[in-house]
Each structure stands twice: as structure tokens, then as C-alpha cells.
Amino acid sequence: MSAPALGRLRIALAALAVAAVSWSLLGVTDAAQAHEQLLESTPAKGEALDAPPDEVSLRFANDLLAVGGAILVLDESEQPWTQGDLVYDGTTVSIALASGMPDGRYEIRWQVVSQDGHPISGIVPFTVGEVAAEPTPAESGTAAVEAAAGRDDGDASPTAGVDAPRLILVGLVGAAIALVGFALALSSRRRGDASPGTTERGSA
Image 1 (cartoon, one colour):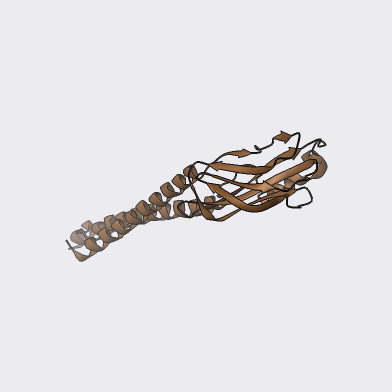
Image 2 (image 1 turned 90 degrees about the vertical axis):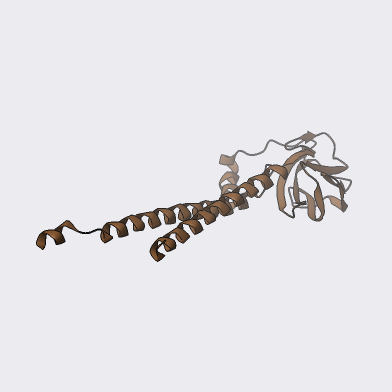
């Protein structure tokens, strides 16, 4: 095999390797999202309780690492109502709540670390007692503010942060495919330039 042909082959193989690694990483990301899913919470998302709970608990699809986790239960004035340490039990993590929680809106803001060391977080809203109807977005303007801040009041998994690496990897795959196409086009052009030209033979 000639040196130019060998060089083109190496370029093509390198590009294909980049594409394979990129798609593999995409698969790992999808797997991480799947096994780190929050299955249920107590209180549940949007649940309206007649009385304040004694604790909150979160259950996930897989076991958790007992490090790097945090659960906060905050009222509308951002006052925390959790007390004590997190209690881990396989796929479940819980924490006790202080007594005397008044009626109102609350958020469980959580972060946990899966067995592979991947941190995830989210927000679970709930209410206690008699709570006035929440203002509509048109009245409060909170929808635009929350959209600008990228806030998600659902069960989050990194989330928002996952999309950026995914886009980068997709870009790498596209670049690799483009590189292979460029190498093949360059090879065809060189073969065409190397063939004898009819004009040169005719002038002789």
C-alpha cells in the first residue's frame, strides 16, 4: 500500500474510532439517566397534606452512596425545616423534620450520589394545610423568571446538565463522519489527478 493511501486509511480509522467512542459515551449517559431515576417521594410531588409530615423520604431505582447527599425542606420564606442526618437504606434516603411546620407551600430540594459516583438532584413541591390558590403566571410573572433561570419543579436528573455533553458528543460524531467523507473525496480527487489527461496526449 502506498504512503498516501496508508495515510488516508489512518485518517478514516481515527475518525471512525472517534465516532464509536462518542456513541459509546452517549449510551453510558442514557444508562446513567435510566438507573438514577427517582421512583417515588413521601410526600409525593404536588401532594396536599392536612398535617405536616414527620419526615421526608426518597426512593430511587438503584442503591445510593452514603456520601455527598443532602435534603432540604424549605418553606416559602426559604426557612429550612429538616433536622438531623440523612438515613440511607439501600435505594431509599430519608431525613426527619422539625415540629411546628405552619400551613403553606414547601419544597423538598434533594441531591444524592449513585453507586457509580454520579450526582443527581431535583425538587419536589408539596403543601401543608389550608393554602391559597397559587397566582397564575400572568399575575405573578414567575413563569418567565423560572424559564430564564432554567428551574424545574419536577423530579430532576441532571440534568439540564446532561444535554450539554450530549450535544458535544453528537458534534464529535458529526465531525468524525465529515472527516471520513473528506478523506474519501480527497482520495478520489488524487486518483483523478494521477490518471493521464486526454488534453496532454492530444497536444503531443
